[in-house]
Amino acid sequence: MQQRILPRLRKLISGRLRNVFIVVLGACVGVAAGLVVTAIGWLVNALHHLLFNLPSDSRLSAQAVLQSPWLALVPAVGGALLAISIILSRRFRARPPVDPIEANAIHGGQMSFRESLIVTGQIIISSGFGASVGLEAGYTQMASVLGSKAAAFLRLRRNEIRTLVGCGAAGAIAAAFNTPITGAFYAFELIIGVYSVALLAPVIAASLAATFTARALSAFQTPIEVGGINPLASADIPAFLALGIVGGALAVGIMLLVTQVERGFSWLRCPQPLRPIIGGAAVGALALITPAVLSSGHGALQVHFIQAADVSAIALLFVLKVAASSLSLGAGFRGGLFFASLFLGALFGRLFAIGIATSGLAPGIDPVISSLVGMASLAVGIVGGPLTMTFLVLETTGDLAISAAVLVASAFSSIFVRETFGYSFSTWRLHLRGETIRAPHDVGRLRNLTVGKMMRADVKTVPEDTTIEAFRQKYPLGSTERVIATDRKGRYAGIVLVAEAYGATEGEAEAGNTIARLLKYKDRFLLPGLNVADAAAMFEKASSEELAVVDNLGNRQVIGLLTEAYLLRRYTSELDKGWKDLTG
Image 1 (cartoon, rainbow, N blue to C red):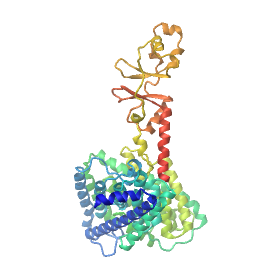
Image 2 (image 1 turned 90 degrees about the horizontal axis):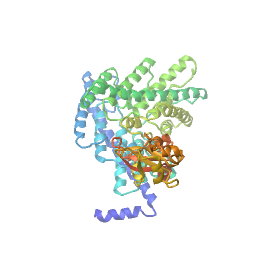
Image 3 (image 1 turned 180 degrees about the vertical axis):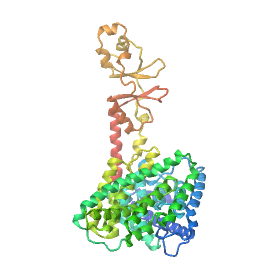
Image 4 (image 1 turned 60 degrees about the vertical axis):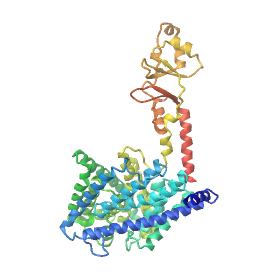
């Protein structure tokens, strides 16, 4: 049956209505994302009630105190379970798991279902047992892999696979927060990397389908409820712009703190499986002070917007939440900082409002609006996506004026982080692993386009001890521009410019001088594994039109030659292909 239906379906998709089918597939992926959010949210909420003995219809981080001091051990137990899962997962995969951003940037949207299932299971354990991490990474991981696998099953094009990965992520965020526009722009800014008319229909269809599915199933959604808001005062806008810059600076500090915690465990030579146990025990100790540090903090954020608190309590909670999130992620718990950054930003926004009002610079500043601006500014710095966070505030408040202030503050935060740090949290973690990804733009083609695939193998070589006179006889003026010289062992020695060999005086040539004195670019050469971008940078550094290609740094045997002109033509061609794919 499958052998008959599948070819017909693929033929139908490849017809004139292909774009319509992509929209339908996007909506189907959105439905799947709604189911994913419903299932994971219900499971984690059930774990919270079971493990922490919560009252019905209550959230973990909204508790004033733990029901029993012994419950502070629950995160450590979760760390032990996570350690077991880490040990077991090493037998099933050899590479780090690929998230939607890395998949779209490098692998053309290809994701592993087994890897995603393992990662999502570890996120459920982490958040379910109280580690200070969010579920959004698990939502987007599973929803995106479903989109990737559906596209691969139907043998869709590379750009269409990337689009369906974005549809999965859009549906996951839309279903989680009950915000379809936010979900769509999350996909545009953070997963696909560009907005275009061709992408709008499938991504919006996925967001709406996921939102309606989650609502119909009464999913355990986490919308942000603010309550009544005062009108935005024009006099407060400069203060909010300053808050955007400070929020960006805080975001950089938090990302670096997570890295330092991880390096601290490495410096102590703590075995990898023991780290989440130690981190869980530390988070449990912080929970004895306030349970608001546990899990992602949805309940605590709602309490923050509803109840007023003194400045010392807010500052203490901010410090404790930063410590808990850094310890959780640095110790190896799975999850993200999406909602934690929103919570921390809201706390800091209120602190900022209290401080600036007390100083007299903006005595009438609204602390709720300041919380919203701080929430978006810090989240933009850590997660990225200024439009994503702006639409989140817009769909939360319905206030266009406040959203405009949030957009400007978010833009300032984004610029600050980009110019001073250059990474969001997701791309920073990839950078620490050795990747150079700064955005989800498709660089897979450029990575696959290596020097070895572009070089010319028919190279002319000459020993470096060849005399100038003999060189002239072998290579008449006009026969070629450059010749590669090798040493006695056949290793690369440099490049001889034929014109310079003929520029030597007759006395120098007759005296038996060798071409060794004419060699250029002795330490400038290419390796076959270099990608086109790195090779272009090497040409710019060497200021040469041609460079030799050697097999490796040890042997330095000449295997080819590459010209800068040819490399740049191929580079431009691949960039054009990528842009056409993105824009349809």
